[in-house]
Length: 636
Image 1 (cartoon, rainbow, N blue to C red):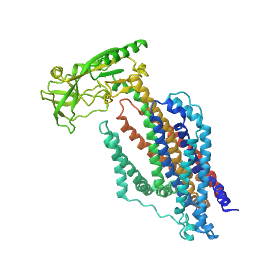
Image 2: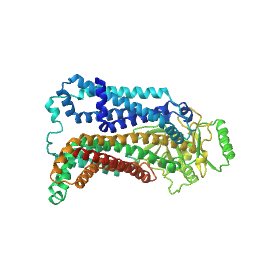
Image 3: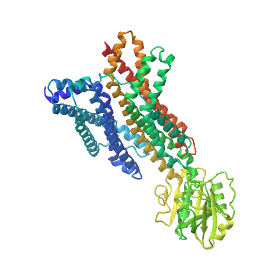
Image 4: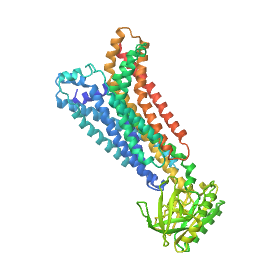
C-alpha cells in the first residue's frame, strides 16, 4: 500500500465524520459555480437593463468565497482535534512528523478535490433550474443552459487555491507536542466550568441595551444606531455563551428540588460543560444564522415597497423644465400623445419652482440656491395625488421644509436669509407629503407663504414643474424610454430637463430587490447549512467522550429510554439554543427595520423565521437519528 492509498483509505474510513464537511463544501462549490454560470451567461447581459444584477452576483461570489475559507478552516481544526489519539498511534509506529503533515495535507486535498467535482457536477445538473428561476425573477426570457468554461475555470481555480492554502495551513495546526499528550487527548478530566459575575452582568447589559435601542429606533436615528447596536449584540452574544449561560446553569444547580428531579441532575450538570466547551461554536452559529435570517427577511420585506412607492412619487409622471426652450413643449406633447394612445386617463398640474439665492443660514451647509414653491401649489399637488390634506399655510416669516422623500425629516430649527431683499425666514417643520421627487430638484427646498412667494418671484430664476396624475401609476411601466433611462433623468444630469416615470422606476426597483432576494436566499442557504455543519462537527468531536460517559452510567442502571431522553435534551440544546438566540436577535433587528417602512413587514419576517425554524427542526431529527444509532452501536 502506497502512502497516497493510505491517505485515501483514511478518508474513506472516516467518511461518516467527514460527511457534513464534504457535503457543505460541495454545496458551497455548487452555489459558487451556479453564480458563475449566471455571470458568464451571454443572455444575462442582454436581459438586464444595467449591470447591477451582475455586480450583485460578483459580490455574492466574493462573500461566499471568504465565508467558505473560514468555514473550511474551522472544520479542519475540529477534525484534527478529534484525531489526536489516532495521530499518536501512527507516530508510535514510526511515522515521522513530516509524514504526518503530508498525510493531513493529502487527506484535505482529496476531500477538497472531491467536493469541487461533486459541486460542479451538481451545478451542471441543477444549473438549468437556477437559470429558469433567475430568468423568472429578473423577468427576462428564459435563459437556455450554457456551459461556460470561464465559470468552470473560475470555480475550479478559486476552490483549488482555497483547499491548497488550507491544506498547507493545517500542517501548522498539527503540532503534535508529546506522544503522551496525543494519547490523553479527550481523556483528561474536564475542569469545572466557572463564570465571572462581572462579565455575565456585562453580557446582560449589552444585550438588553441593544434590544432597547433596536426597539426604540426611528427613521431618523436608524443609521446612527446601526453600528453600535451590531457591535453591542456581537460582544454581548459572546459573553452570553462564555459567561452568562454558565452563570444561569450554576443558579439552576442551586435549586435542589429541580436539580434532583429524575435525570435533571445529569442533564443540568452536562449542560454547563456543553455550554462552556461549545461556547465559541454557539457564538459562531448564532452570528451566522442571524446574518442569514436578517438578509433573507430584509429582502423579502422589500416587496412591500410597491405599497409605499406612490408616497415618494405623487405624480405618475413628473417633468421639470430647467429653462424656456421649445423642446419642453414637444416633450409634454409627446407624453400626452403616448398616454392617449394607451388610453390612460390623467390630470395635469403645473407650477413654477424658484431658485433663490441664500445669503446666510445657521446650518453647517450653505446652499448656493434653494428651490422654493408656494404653499398653494404644494397643496394642489398633494390633493391631485389623492392625499388627505390638513396642513395650514405658514406665516410670512415661516417656511416648511420641502419633503422630497419620505425618509427626510430633520426637525432642527433653521434660519435662512433669502434673495436680493435679504428676507429672513425660519423653518421649524416639514411638509407631510412629497410634492416634488428628490430626483427633480437640485437641493432640499422650502415651501413658503403665497404672498412671500409672489414677492420672491419678481426677480428670481424660474423652472416649471408638470405633474401627470392617474389612478394606476403602474400603467406607465416601460413608457417614454426615449426620454428617460431606467425611469428617470436626474436634475444633476447634463440635460435641459429632469423627469421620473413611476411605473418604470417601480419595475426597475422590484426586479433589483427580487434579484437581491434570490442571491440572499442562496447565500442564506449556504450560511444555514454551514451553521448546521458546525453543530454536526462538534457532536462527532465529542462522541468518544460521550460514549465513555454513557457507558459508565449504563453500568449503574441507565435504561435505553432514559438514554434517548437525555441525548434528545442535549441535542435540543445544541441545535436550538443558538437558533433561538439568533431568532431573538433577528426579531429586534426587524423591529428596527420597521421604522424604515410605512407599512408592516411583520408578515414577511415571521414567514421567513418560521421557514428557517422548520428547516432546523428537520435537520435536528435527521442528526438525532444518526447520532443515536452511532451511539448505541458504540455502546454495545
